[in-house]
Amino acid sequence: QVQLVESGGGLVQPGGSLRLSCAASDNIRRINAMGWYRQAPGKQRELVARITSDNTTNYADSVKGRFTISRDGAKNTAYLQMNSLKPEDTALYYCNANYKRPGVQYDYWGQGTQVTVSS
Image (cartoon, rainbow, N blue to C red; front, side):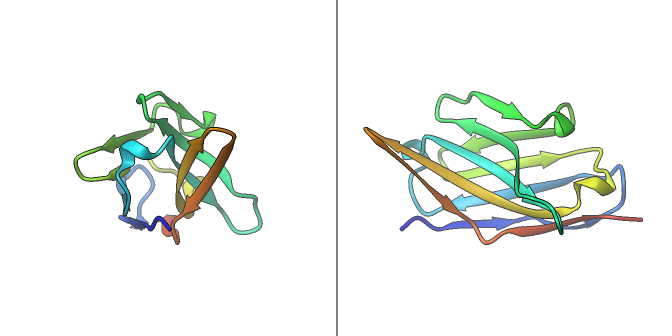
C-alpha cells in the first residue's frame, strides 16, 4: 500500500500563490505518473496537472500558464506550484500516483488538501 500525503493548501486571496506538496511512501521512480486532481462542491473530480516518469507534463486548459507540476526523485515528492489563483480554483486537491505494470494499471490517492481562493 502506497501512502500519499498532501500539504500546502490554505486560504489565499485572488492573484496569490500556493505550492502543494505530495510526499509518497514509495520511490517515485517506480511510479508511472503523478498527478493533481481537484473537486469543487457539486462538481466532478477533474485532472489539473500530470507528470510522467520521463517528466512529460500535461495541464487542464484552465490552469495552463498559471500552474506548474514537478517531481523530486530524491525526496519522493511531487509539487504543484499555483500562481495567479482565481476563485474558481477553489476545491479539494488530491494527489494521485499511477502505477503501470505489464497488463495492469492501478492508482493510489491522497486524502486531499483544501485550497480556498477568496478575498
